[in-house]
Image: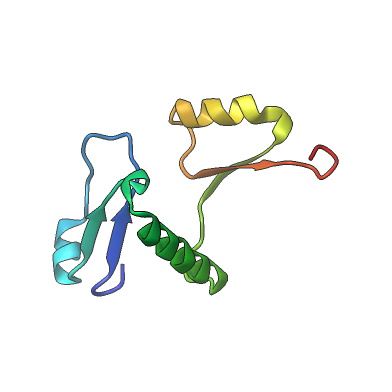
Length: 98
């Protein structure tokens, strides 16, 4: 974690979370907890713009748990619903299907 960093927590199925307390204090880390669905539209749009910029500048990297073809969409949902996917599930749709 970078000094004076910010950790955004926007989703979890856990009732509690462990944080590196001493490291967070020493580096003065700020934590923000929120529900994406409750954000005002203008805030959500600014956040999407900023995330896009960070991704394009290679400042952040998404964690991909699995790549699945559209034919395995049921498996993709099961992985998420069962909590077996730590990260994003990318579902590939071929141009011929669209």
